[in-house]
Amino acid sequence: MSRLPSTRLRFLVLAALLLVALPAARASEEWFDRLDEALTASALEGAFRTRVSGTVDLEGYHLPTPAPALISASRTDLFNPRLTLFLDAQLGRQLYAFVQARADHGFDPGDGPLRRRVDEFALRFIPWKDGRFNLQLGKFATVVGNWVNRHGTWENPFINAPLPYENLTGIWDTEAVASATTLLQWSHVRPGLSAPILANEKRLRIPVIWGPSYATGLAVSGALGAFRYAAELKNSPLSSRPTSWTKAQKWWTYPAVAARLGYAPNALWNFGVSASTGTYLRPSATRTIAPGFGRGDYRQLTFGQDVSFAWHHWQLWAELYETRFEIPRVGDAHTVAGYLEAKYKFTAQFFGAVRWNRQLFGTIPDGVRGPVHWGADVWRVDLAPGYRLTPHIQLKAQYSLQQEAAIASLRTHTLSSQLTVRF
Image 1 (cartoon, rainbow, N blue to C red):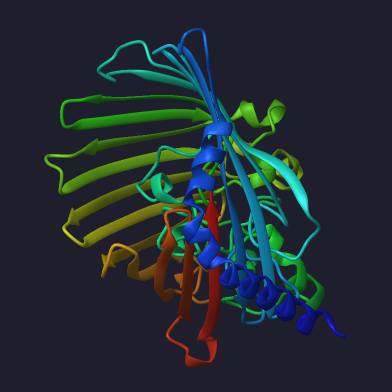
Image 2 (cartoon, rainbow, N blue to C red):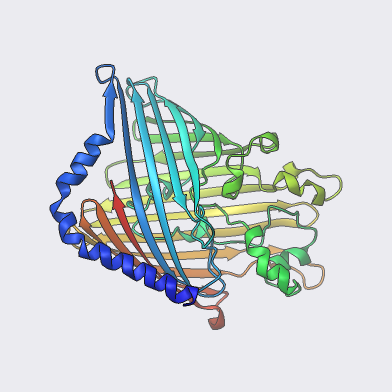
């Protein structure tokens, strides 16, 4: 039997087994309560408390070719299981630590070998009760925007991330752009790359923000009345790939800085503005840099605005990011990416969500044809119904329609499903 039918069969069998077990799961909420008690401990008369929790995710994808966004798959059907464990520890009122570990086929969905990995680990110091100031050290998600606060599989009404967090641009972090022609080839605006390079270049490209950006560093945050603030100093910028997030050494030569200022006038609204800057080239790309320049001259500058709204059964989120990749001797490559997302709860268990995504690319000077757009504009719409079968089991499905540069032949369709069990 070929791998494709085997993958489909494996996912269907697992889904069927879970559905058969659903009545028992609904009747065994006491089992989850006992598990929660077993995974919770305290000492020093309650001053020290720890808790282990987690999720088991079973994802299935039916993909176009090549696979979209950050998904790495060599076939059109992909089964992507994932185990995530969380450790939370509290010592008194002032010290809090957390760890997130995962076992899966890669940070982003893919068909590679099964791997184990620690994605987050951090220590937070909370000197005052009112939360005016917190200091955090370790490896953790970025403070930029509002999607990161709900990017977990249980909180996210969708299966994937919004477009700014996963759409690959023509910028490479392994090699500096030498000319406008090179960038247009890397962006597929102008043909010229050989077939072998086209087959492998996806792993070289970077998005505006790579998912939750679990880079290493320190952050300060706090609340002052209706205002919220957060700032971070990290080893790599928002667009850096997961393999860069734990690297220290040469990355710290050009650290990345980001900040967000939020304003919540009431329980309905939350507004925020963000900014970030950092060097997007990896240290290994130094040999390709233009003479007379350094890695610090190849910077990514990102400015963002976000807003969220909640009222009765409705929840709305929106983000807009303006990014500039500075390329010496070529010019600045500008792009704007954003989305508008809405979720509606039909019942206490059933919800639906829709998301409109858009990314536009600016122009760069080209000696042959004058100013030329350095990337293909793209839009995507995501539709996702979801159902919480029990307080510990959630099922989601998603359909995504994407089109580049208003060319019908570049319209793609992606189907996905996700079953999550949390404990």
